[in-house]
Amino acid sequence: MLGETISSGTTKYYITEMIVQPSGTNFNMIPRSQFVQNIIAQCLVGLSSARSTFRFRIQGHDGKVYILMWLLNSDTLLVESLGNSASSSVFTLLEDNLRPDSKSSGTWNAVKVLYHPCIKNRNKDLADAWKNDIGVHPLTFPSKTCLELLLILSLSNACLPPSLRCMNSFQVAFLKM
Image (cartoon, rainbow, N blue to C red; front, side, top):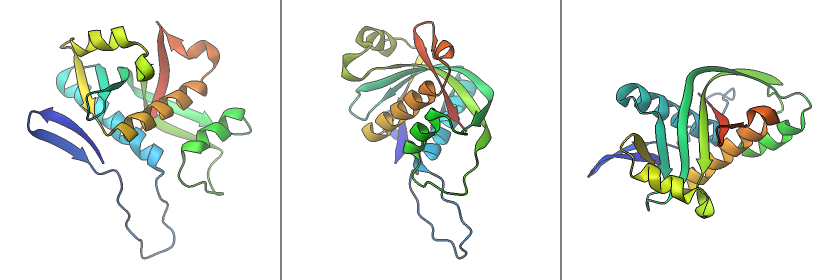
């Protein structure tokens, strides 16, 4: 389950897994990675609109910081051509269901983010600075979801041309909505 602490004693939860068996056979399951991207992207957009916050600290329930994230654009249209590129086989590792009828390309609304991974004491000084900055909003998720998000961001970054992977020492990624 995904969730975030709104205030002391109040937690907002997002249902992350619900299996509903359809009565018909023409039902496509949404892969978990797509669901996680969508929920977190919507969360970032919602908070940036409501609180004018664009920097986020993604942390586990234990307070451990996994990712520092800066929402750059929330109105991006992402066009992805899977074709025969080497990255297409990498990105499908995230998908729960590999469907033979999947499209060779796609267009999605997306958010563009800049991020710093903070696992294994990477970017510790910056993480500490962001922890004390009131302009940074913490988002708390289960540790597994934080690591899953980091993997999604890393794979998104790897799909970009080398010249577009970094911006001002941050890594660039897209989260599909």
